[in-house]
Length: 539
Image (cartoon, rainbow, N blue to C red; front, side, top):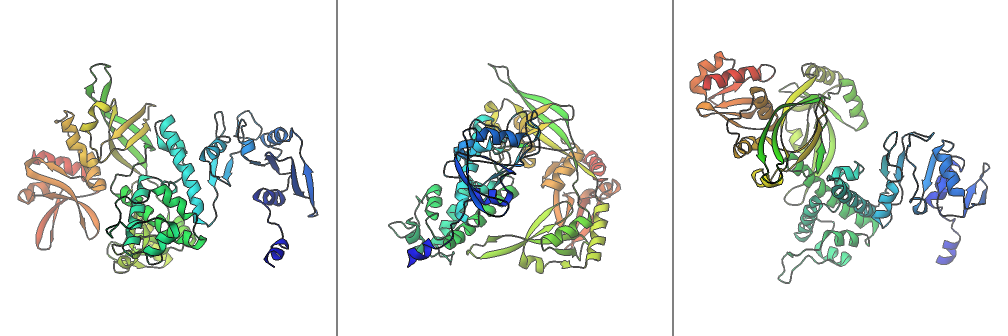
């Protein structure tokens, strides 16, 4: 009876047939290995179409000449051909390349991606990997993402270039962050903090053992690739349940790394309105090759990307956002749902993303409800947002500290926890590749490189302290640091009350907080000038 029922069902057309029937074969150029295919005429009747040996060449030419707007190619058409927006072709429109079936072999998919992204092109393609709501498919996309990362690291010395921005960090399920996420997932399953997947059920379904002979959790846990492959054998529902928890843990690991400034993203290309080298000092010369290591201080001018109130209203409507105003500060924000995190007991902590004019903050829902943020009407939001935006500068100037040139001989001198590498081009066309010195390490690194007399400018100090939490020891035992008063950042001078009169005459101000008098440097346009006067008084 079952065979009889299956035999009576209509055949399910493949993806290729569905595309051909939907758009019509007059719009689609097909470059595959098929000699026959089933097409649909204008009346909806199906018929068999035979293709000659030169069909692929004719179809490719039709697409490159602009006679057909859509091209479909398979592995048979993915080698030795070019489908990019060639400057010599009639069809120079930007390509949208959909990777419909990634397949088991990542190298085949990479070969296919290279057909539409080549030299002498009018524009680079937009790559769009396609997956269904079956989370197990992410396993194949992950393999391609990892291979592209490796390809970029080997061929161009930077992982980002290999992927060309096709994939997000979360798409690579075999990264170091995925390893940490997997360990946390195993821990939650073993400790009973993942209620949907008990330990015994997980071990039975996957054949992966998390329990040691002594009864504790294994030290030698199953490897990541084995875990991902075993998940493919589970039911669709169970795949989705486990993958959803795994991806949330992965997002949490990446978010934490970014917040701590240790996110490993390979070589990052910086973009700004302008870069200008303010100083360049030679700190090391290799005795054999005479290669030079330089310490560069670069001024960066960035245009502030500030959205208008009208844009934020449209954004809130699109993503079910709430319009908020802080009752204490009067600042405005849009609150939208964001991915959750897990607490120490494995419970889900729902969060929201607060979008402000120049920053974003993620908060647990319960903390938001107990804070001074309140939901308001559109008119109140527009007034508060516009007032805050009007007071913001159109551009921001800060400084980068880079060590460039030959780095290996002095690598141990540089901080090991922050090893980010940047590429940039200065306003006069000079290209620079170097390792950035994090704000908290500037003083240590400059001293170890023999630049003990090098001082940060007042403007740079204000930027580092206010934006990056950098603390600076000033003459006379006074420390400049960032403090938060009522949730707002300030520039505070510690151990400076004894000089209150002179510092206040220079532009500082005091405030009594919790019965203690504290000294502050004003923020805003006057901050650098006031700080310069403070340093002169203390010196």
